[in-house]
Length: 631
Image 1 (cartoon, one colour):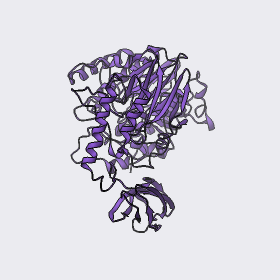
Image 2: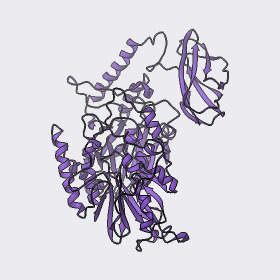
Image 3: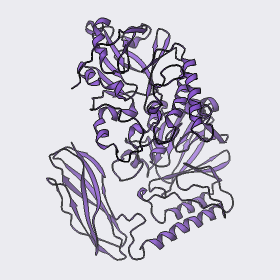
Image 4: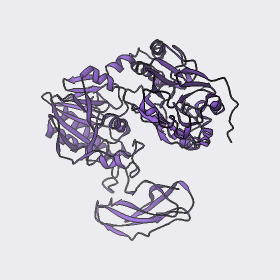
């Protein structure tokens, strides 16, 4: 049970209507209604019911509650967190009991409201994850909302603008407040003092790597671009010369980064000039993972092809949401360098997170429409339906689903959408003519780095992506038909399609097909490249206790002759499921079979449902599973 701590140091007013209370971290109280220049600053503070209210930036252990009377504040309406660390957040249960609404950075929301899952599931044995995710709350806390990065919003009568400033943690944000012609930045633990940070250890996000220090350099430059007049850190003292303080930290941290690399890394150049021109109207984002592209229109607009992890310094250890940082850090450089007015549309070659992670944020901030092929759009919209790797945490509903084979117009360009399974079953290639050259965006299909007689052409197939034999031969046929001058991939250098390259690629494809036929018993049973003959969808679901839900078992006959398939549904004790009648399948036939189950009354996490499968004389057993959460 949390207890309210004893009051600490005397509060000090660090800006008009902004009070600093020292606790396990610096907590800042912004008195609502004290900025007469902002109409939004009326609300709660102007005294609904005669109250004088405030908004807190971070909460520490809760000592701020002991100072409200002396400050003449009746209550704190909202608490805005800069990051998830326990020294910022351990008093949040007291804030909730006080009646305050909790707002948190979107990247770190699960380390607040679902932190118990982190404690239960976090790998501890043979642990190479150096991130300080365990410096989090001990128990979950109710979150009112995630803050809208890059956009102003009003909380408790106070208008603030949160911007991403990763460094101390991956999901950290800084809050910008305009108060009587002064721009105040609540920086969390990005900076402690001029040229100093509160912790270097917190910036190490993976074993031996430098992601956090590099991000700190970038965040210092980006925050400087906002021209703050005052920095208010979570640890340390207010800084009245922000540009000098941030420049000194950026320079020192840059030296630190360079000392741990074989060669220096000019991070500011990467930030200011993130895009390089392939041709006058076609750009490559050299800062992103995966590689993103921008198609420039004479209107001043840009269309993005893929937009994953922008301005990345590498991928931190772990697959949790708090370990992945979407942000829009390359946009100012793109607009300044190439005169882009706005990003109006974006295309996704496939659903993998490194190709789509930033798209929801980009749509929210820029108003860009998200387009995808009719094969990719359903996967983006329902990441729990299929057992596929590298899917984003949330559904991504596209603004336009484009049928395969259709040509669409964006400003002066015509873009044709082609089906391109191989790397994954659900992928598309985009054909466009730009600056007199036919270009094909191929996603992650192959490297495109092969050199006859020197280096193999590596085909990027992954079995759990639903790789099938025959997919790569079809993609070579597509390339021959289109005859592009340039292939643009998601992770490798642009490939000019010189004479003989497609023949060279065909040799690699023929080799892929041959080696699979040599190694797998496909002449006896068509098990497919991935060996999966039955799947259950949805693969993941969340159901109310005792409820009935519909599922589909998809089964395929691998025999060269017709065969009867029998499927028994295996459920946990206390559950029930339909009996499925045997079905006769023709050679190679795939069929969907619907069934219902009734889940048990007890809450469960990832309860297992299985399909016990026999096809002809092939006894596969519990060949497929699905996972169900019961609430």
